[in-house]
Length: 107
Image (tube, rainbow, N blue to C red):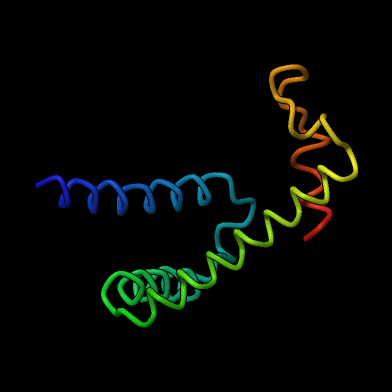
């Protein structure tokens, strides 16, 4: 039952997001509904592949590991540049400019 609730919540979220986008659209007649439908269908297919096909899941795990390594390199570079401003959260708190922006610039 919980899994059914999760699926329903996800589908409801998609439709709410589409409704919000439609409501704020300045030219509603120009919305390419075929493209929107194909995009959502592609997301569902990709989700099923990731969840049900082992080698696809393994590939995305590999990509996630590579991305995590890259994030660690970015943090090490920010630590090299800014020192304790990145690592000492107790003394300075979370400083966006020294902890997030270097990652954005790195990518």
